[in-house]
Image (cartoon, rainbow, N blue to C red; front, side, top):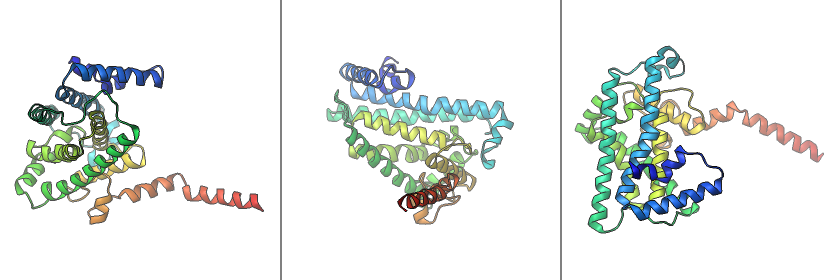
Amino acid sequence: MDVLLSIPLISTLLTPSWSTSMNLLFFYATWSTLVLAYDSAAIHASALLGVRIILWLIPSLIFLLFDTLLPSLSSAIKFPVAASPPRRPLRLLGLAVGNMLLVTGVEAVLSYTFYHGMGKPIFRTSTTLPLPWHLLKHILILLTSREILTYYIHRFLLHGNKSPMLTRLHATWGHANPVSSVQLYADHPFPLLTHRLVPVFIPSLILRPHLLTYMLFTMICTAQDTISASGYSIVPGIILGGIARRTTVHYASNGKANYGAWGVLDWAHGTSRGGDLLTDIKEEADKHDVKGRSARKLDKGVAALQ
């Protein structure tokens, strides 16, 4: 627990800062102390657990309580197909928490084995912080790789005929309830590890970025999955709002469409239903009357030149 509370990524989420410079100084000092005091496998496992508790478990509990205690209010701000509360919510929650610990534990064992077998950490762990450009580049590579792997694994292994066992288990467990944040981890362990661990861990293992970069990547993925699977129709933004709608349609169609989050590969392969990323951008532009505002600005510019 002391390792978990000492992780700067977690501390930054839980404690406010007086200024950006002081926050960065505190971050660097805490990170350096942590690296010198603990081995990388312990930091990796503790950070991973902390991220999933803060960005998945706690929000999922809040959503579940809200849906259970205030069903009429909840259904008013959810997609119609996601308005039904889950059956046996306590059992569902217990399964999801157990699976979350399983996925985290498998990754921790892999990290520990690599560290003690190879004599070096699975991800670069040093007191030197990653440069902003390297951080951004690695995050973009990892997010793109994850999206590609997720689409093909989800479509062909979990909903296709390439692996009948995984398809059957995922249909029976992963689609047993309407879409919800808790349902993310309420799958059978085999399809769950294939769907949630492989697309995140394999690209990271090949790229081997700084551990802080990997943790930020994990935070982005966890937050995206938690919000997009909530079933709420009020999720703001072009990206998250579209992902939430496509995720809901995927569950409502029993896995017959929308296998990726961004919608780009679904659009390219003809498996999109309920709109893709291009549709999201167009709807957002129409909402803010981008075309009309641009035309008015052009008219003003022409008038100023006359």
